[in-house]
Image 1 (cartoon, helix red, strand yellow):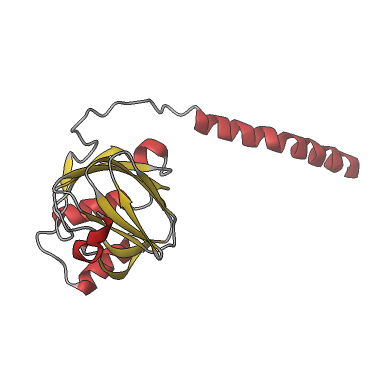
Image 2 (image 1 turned 180 degrees about the horizontal axis):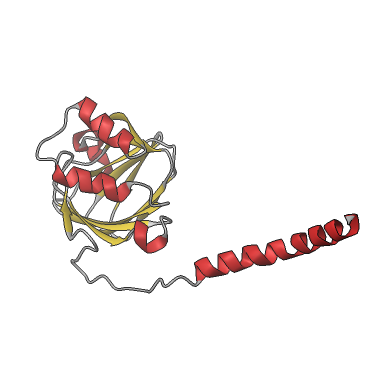
Length: 194
């Protein structure tokens, strides 16, 4: 009897990696298909017109549902010169911006950066960062990894018809795994960068 238990245990141990592989293989073979999102279009939400922080427009290009929560990519059309985000922290996501058009000022930790067309910036999770639009118009691709609650955050911000007070703003950020840690960046303070 003990020998049968031993043999069954060994066979179980040998089979476990294969069973794990089958489960992973099932996940890899899900019916996920490629897709195209045309220029000027947003997937799932159409154009998300932000309110409260700025009046920029975000188009979701790749989202939570498309990648099992691994990544979210937005195209942001910037129409709010002199406005951007408050200094904030993403607790769970790294963030990448690629400037398609226009100019921006970024702060990452204690460093400041000027970004122009074709520039890319990486913002690591847990590091305070903010940006401000400098040019009259601009456009950036914004990538979050993992996707987290960014779709929910931008959807919420698109429904607000007023600028939230600091407590409301802090709550919206906190509800989406972020934390406001400072004010917006002002262009006039960094005019010498541009």
